[in-house]
Length: 380
Image: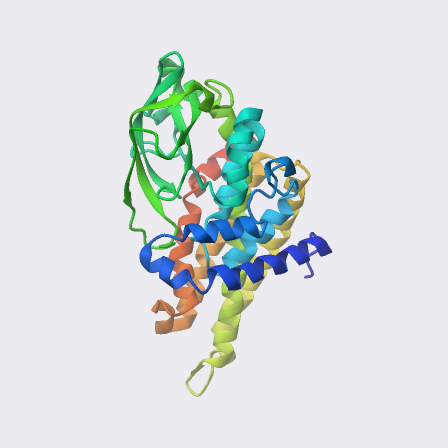
């Protein structure tokens, strides 16, 4: 079915993204995977190409265009290229909205130009060793000392943790406030007491630096409070829908791409003297996956349009996230099986997609949390 959500401008932007990937990412990606981190030059190249800060106002160096469809194009093309390591979606669509909607004018002048140029790489630090989806379990504290906060605690599984120059940290500012006693504090590279742990060894997305972060009596100026004091819970809930949409878009794009390459593989690969595609079981597998992808794509495209218009609610974003990522997981597993032994070899795209994509049902809110959100909305 022909997709109808994109205009000629979006198609032109897609070509720009593809050119960027071929020139600035694909020639270096294997090296980044081995090193466990991408080059900072790739971020600066993305900034020069206008891929960073798409929704940031032009006066601060951004694209001035909040249309989420451009972010969807980025997510689709990076996913098809297998380039999860350069976490532009995290930067643009997860952290960007916090800065554009909550930052003061002074903070915007201080941070957004570098955000858009690639000179400032960002991260958000919510997850702790003992607190993932449960915000009430956060133990990182920020004590008010008059003109600054004293931040203590640790975070883990932080994407961009090694490269980040600016980290939005969720910390407890009112101990007795529970989830409603949390605030967002911006910690900048070089602040005394801010330390990074090891670059974590993951089963997939090897070039996407993921780290432990430690805060030991870090003095955070009052000017680095982002949004309202004790307002982090509301701020986080407001922006999670877009984060989940970005993950969902990548999920369906990955499933579709895996289906494409596997369809081609079974046409070429022979068993028992004939192509795999001639076996009824294989045809049924392809038919089932193609149907599931087509149905999911229709729903996701509707969600993309609704979100671009500011009309997507948290429930439908949760539906999109859990369904698309669980589909991605199923398709990756079935496509690897259809590749046989070759599917287990890293040189085949399906093997890398299998490990890279496994995190999709976990970060941004697990499938179980998504179902809980949906269930509560329906059952009270």
